[in-house]
Each structure stands twice: as structure tokens, then as C-alpha cells.
Image 1 (cartoon, rainbow, N blue to C red):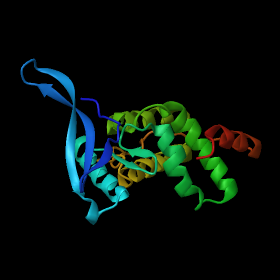
Image 2: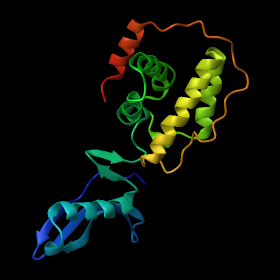
Image 3: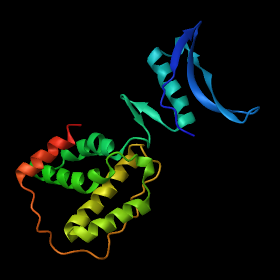
Image 4: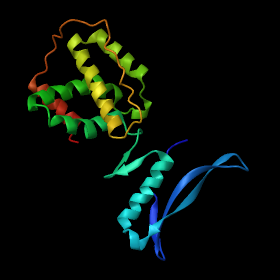
Length: 203
């Protein structure tokens, strides 16, 4: 069943805050799905303000859908790989990388990961899919390049799990392919890296 991406709404009735949200249920008479509005008593106005009532409703929605809403973003596995890397992974890592090193690292991530997985949702990944991608890279890329991408995949999905976008890290047991090529003669000049950083965009 598809997850709802709505946040619901709240209102003050008398002395209490009430929350409302729509959910899909199975009609027992027709065995078909239908939409209904659920009502939740959030608490007394004397005990909480509107923002606190909203947080309680968000918690109820999280229990219903497995997703939560933070700073304008739905925290769940339906976000795409490209979005997560650009907006949640790279902003954390760039502060720990030297400027020139960061440009090269971003270029590698774009070419070997984002180009293949950009629009794919995080929930669509499993160990098999990622391992096959590494095996395919090993046929064309150097040993050092494959080792780097293996490390990036593990870092990216570990971060997705830690931030709550995934319940389970599909890259945790990824293995480095045994058949690896020699030294990569490809070089990345500064101009190429700068063009890559523009295509990745600013988070």
C-alpha cells in the first residue's frame, strides 16, 4: 500500500487540540480500499501550544506511515538516491574534505553512482543490486577507483540509515570484487571537476 505524504491538520475545539489526517483502509463489505479522515485528540490547550500539538500529530502520522516530516522534508525511503547524496550526504562530508579533494570525490560519485542511480528511491536498493553495480564497475574501472566507490556506497547508505531514511543498510555487507584491474590512467583536471560540481548543484 502506498504511503501517504500528507501532514494532516490541527484545530482547537473548546479546550483541546484535535488532529486530523487521511488514511486508506479496507472496506470490509466490499474488500476495496477507501479513504477516511482519522481524528486524534492531541491534548489540552492549557498544556501545549499549536507547535507542540503539531509535533504530537506528526508522531501519530509516523506510527501510521513510517515517515516523519522535518524542516520541510519527508524522512523516509521514498527519496531518491540523487537527492539524498546532494542534500544529505555531501553537505556533511564536504566540510571534512579539502577543497580540491572534494571536487574530485564529487566527480567520482557523480560518474560512478549518481549517473546510474540518480532517480532511484532509496527503498529500491538491496545488497544484490549494489553488489552487481560494483562487479560491473570492476570490469571497467581501476582497483583504486572500485575501492573508493565501495567505500562511498557504504558511507552513503550508512548515513541514510543513521538519519532515518532507511530502516536497514543494504550496503553494510558489500564486498570488494576479487577481480580488479590495475592502475587507472584517467586523470581529472580542475576544469572537469568544476563542471561536475556545477552539475551536482548546491544542496
